[in-house]
Length: 386
Image (cartoon, rainbow, N blue to C red):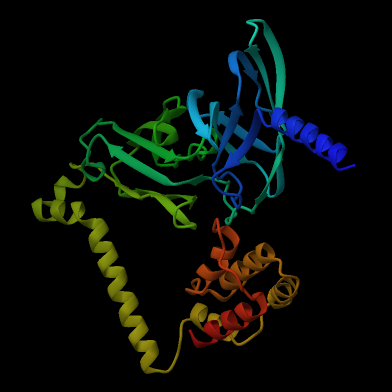
């Protein structure tokens, strides 16, 4: 019996060793992304074979976008004392929806050379992995990046245009760790007082050593219909910074328009005043606002909007029940959305402790011991003291 058991053990050990000659895995850099955040996958094969031909097709899915970000890497590596042939393929994956996301299985078809010189084929399969994808933490279209740069270039000073001069505006957005179609749509700059011509946009994804870089370029030719003062409105593009795990805003600043020669019949001093009209208008508005505030404060009164906000903060708010239910259920995504709506309703900025909730939602490795009910109590306490 002992000899038979030993023989069975040797047969099983030999079979396990044979199966161990080829192994394929799907490795990932983090498993707690938000929608549209890049997750870097490495498809790694460890083969005790002399591979001559190979074929691997990464599976498509309506649940994610993906792109290969480097050439396949074949090299020799010693694994547990054995010199194996290693295969690595790097994939950047971008979830399209929140919730559990399954990737794989992935199969690698290999043609290898046997000891007798003959060729043979085998297929190695990597088991699927599951990522817990969080909702995108903003109502804006999902855009996640580790770095985002917005460049706004003007061909001339817009407040001092010459007669018949056309202003060219060129805006470039580059986002590291994103795809081109994640970048925002071209903003609408049309105004009743503005003559505008839009050039075709340029949108591309460029592979770099640091990762994929999404780039979009917008260009317009602009000219006011008259020389009367006007301001081209601002634009804002929210994006999720994957390094500090916070939503940031890339702004397009407002642009004051006007002709340098407009109002020349008023004299040189009036021209100087016209060129500085945006600063003068802001200073005048700030001065009038400060004076009005002092007058109301002296009489013990508040502006109507401020008074409404003060009264509103005394009420529990229409989102209190949703926050309580989400905290009791431990649903942090719903709690975050309800707290954000509550802050907007009260007209208050987000307190510092919102970062604790965001860390639980969006950090790659959230700290343990988070209590949603205790956080909600501290949230209400902070708002009452503000």
